[in-house]
Length: 336
Ligand code: GCU
Image 1 (cartoon, rainbow, N blue to C red):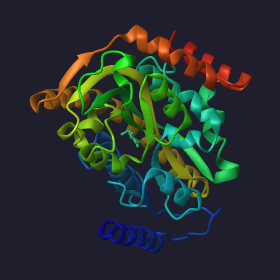
Image 2: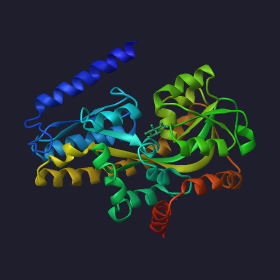
Image 3: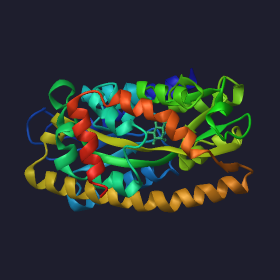
């Protein structure tokens, strides 16, 4: 109850403050500036919060205070699925949303959510910053949903972790309830890996692991530590089943309302943010692994060939249309 009340208050504040800071506010007209409300489901010690708070400061300085970003962390404005709707209707300006959520708006985004799509973080970021590969996809939600995808922030390698004991091969996951994001690709992925996929929003995972509703989850080491999942799930299996991706969404009308000069500054500062985040990600992943080990987490390697074999049909299933195949191939070529 209390959390819900606080969330409502935060949404209220988020919606009132920027309106008063906004000097034009009429969709479609050039705004002279405003404080953009940005929703994030991570805590303040997560690299995405740090990089985005810095984005706000740089944007404010570069536009002489006309444009600013206020980051609302910890799902204060809602879980990703709810917040995407708020960005779509313009009551929240920007949000970080996992690729799995966009797959629910357009199946083509599913191509970027598959195991094997990205070979590394650098490969992923090269693709995400290349409009010749992702330009069409990133503007594809503008007409129907008023959402523009500005680019992305890596989620790094995702691994499995469990409460019950070490996982070395698919058979070890038999009968275990493993949390996945709300995505068909990821439900099929965990089922193919041998587990029993249980979709759930990010903020609910800790309690579900603690209470035994879940036997495990999958995520990167940074989320594992910043969400304190290490306190309740002590076994991390280095499955590295995929390199995950978060997208930065902005309401298309808000984005189009910037003057050409301010839009140029905004785009440049955002591009800088993606680069900074990637650097920070690599440093903080190493740190998270050290901290996990120091607090009693047991890491183990897995039979990679067995998991790759189990996942191959999932990749095949979701490369449905010729357009999806083409996109997947263009992504692979970028890694040459
Ligand atoms: C990562 C990702 C989030 C996502 C989360 C999840 O932390 O950065 O955007 O919500 O995984 O597993 O739900």
